Length: 488
Image (tube, rainbow, N blue to C red; front, side, top):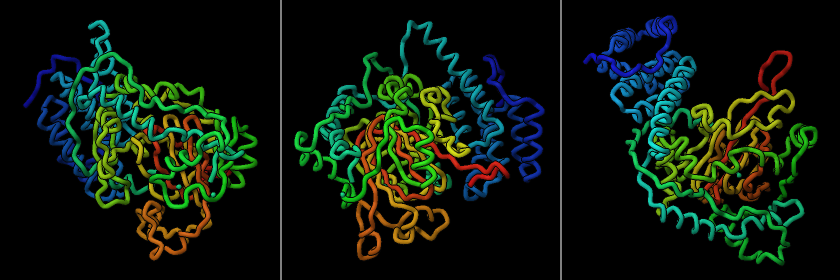
């Protein structure tokens, strides 16, 4: 079917850019795709759909790292065409969703075009909303406001006095653990969920109304037994039994470089992200719904990525928010936005954070900035990452356990290439008979509180569990040699 365009088309790539891409696709044998895209350019919606499906199949024809890069750019081009047809039909949510898919799954060539198209659609929507005297329309599953408030209240009760725990020692944290790389090749095997519209009232709701203040009471003043019992419930065996992670307030770059970065020691840094707009904005669910609620993101569903029933889905951020606030959260249904380059995909959130100066240490080159957003109970199992890692806790609290790289063999890494940075040791259900060397290992652990950052040196093993609704940002960087510009 050929459509006559009465509404303005979304911005499509220039002819020269498109022709160069199609020539590369042809060289890879994609003649049918090229023919379909040429028909799509004349207004043939069925050809656009067929080209989109063909590019999608190519993305899933091999392990992710083996997919020809040109097919990722071809997928982006097909997303632009599909979005244009959706926009022409007045289906703005469908247009946004397919553009997000282009950003998530596509290549870098047409990313500026995808972002321009998203800005165009959102500009139209903002203009319409302004004309309707500020009426707010959010996208996602229907929400029960009283249920949200009850979930927050219940979580506040569960976490009572956790802030006090971090003051049981002079170091503030007592102890008596990327997407690991495999995630890239696993997600998006599940179908995307449908998008639904609903209206929200104008009352503000907070992601957390928890008391995140750092009270200065000593253990005898804090009902320490109750404090520990609440924290230890559900944490790995022997938590808070070994070494301290030093905590420094507003650590200078020189001090960080000399005493932690170069020796390869972890450190908790407080006070360094208090100026981020995200520190206030991301606690407000209405802000997230209003700003990015209709954007599609990949999420993980299940206990963690090593669990047999773990899967991935595509949902809107509004639906993610509802799942996070749900009172009926089961381990097999926990939904987690994990290690996703959210700030590359959604520019509105990019301005809410800043790259810490620590990431420039020793000629550092930033490799990735990822978001981690989910409910209490989400787990990232024990694994290691090659880059330097700075984990910033914006909303909520997390338990983190660290083992040095020197004990890697005792942590029984998987032998499969896709999982060789992950440990076979399940800290939540430690099998001492199967992994005897792991049980007696010393480690460091802490509760990473709101407003703090944890520096994790390269290849240090880490296990992470959310103790509340949690929004974190991780910064990965490598040291670059001034001689050959190769990352070390």
